[in-house]
Each structure stands twice: as C-alpha cells, then as structure tokens.
Length: 186
Image (cartoon, rainbow, N blue to C red):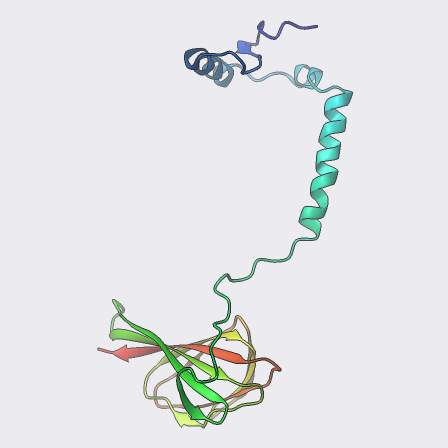
C-alpha cells in the first residue's frame, strides 16, 4: 500500500485527520502548485471501487434531473378575498398594491394595482389615462384593443398606451389577476 504521507508530484495526499491549520494550509499550497499529473498517473487513483461509487452516484442523481420541473416565479398569485378592493364591474375588483417614486425620465411615480377577475368576468371597455404595463399573475385573458384582439396567459406581459381603449375578459376557469403598473407622468 502506498504511503499517504509520501509526496507525489509535490502534492501531499493524506487524510485531513490530525492536521494542524498550518499543516493543512501547507498541503493545500503544495497541491495547488503541483504540476499537472499525466493521464496515466491520474488514472492510477481510479480503482474498481471508485468507479462503482462514481457510477452509483451518477445513477442515483439522474432521476433528480430527469424528473425536475422548470423553475417558476416564486411570487405566486395573490389570494384576495371576495370583498378586497373596489368593484369596478360585475366579478371584477381592483386592489391597490402601492405607489413608488420613479427615476425614469418623464415618470414621477408608479402605481401598482391588481385587477382581480372571477372566471368569465369582463371589465368595462375604457380609455387609458396613462401608459401601463400589465402582467398576468394567474388565469388567461382575451384582450380587445381598438385594432386587435389577443390572448395572454399567466406569466405574460402586455402594454397599454395612453389614449387607447382596452377591454379584458377572463377566459380561464380560475380567478385571474392582472398586476398593472401605471406610469404616472412627471
């Protein structure tokens, strides 16, 4: 059996038991500065037991990667009660999230609201007073603008321009939530 304390290419191979901090630092330094081992020497350390352990580890880890699901946003859809916010249409309520100062050119602050739609509910077609960025946190909606109609799903954005009309309908079977960021001009 090979002596574990014998230097090999300037690198001490030993168990980390009973080493002082100074000895450990010295051995790490020597290992880091050792010249690279040729391929044949590197493979001498691989025996059947090591190969079996590596294979079993790889086999055990494979299902973890194969069965994993893609990452989703961690914010989750807000859970609002039936009386939260202000009702603006049958089955549609608006809940104010907050207002923040803005450093964007031409924008004094931003107002964030959640429009909560019951399944099948629709808002009233209205003119946009400000530019807005809408994010769907849950549900799926049909958005009708003056020149086009399109669908947006959970996790997608769409925008509204000041002076244009917008009409949203929740076409999903779950409570739908628009997270709307209203850009308040300076």
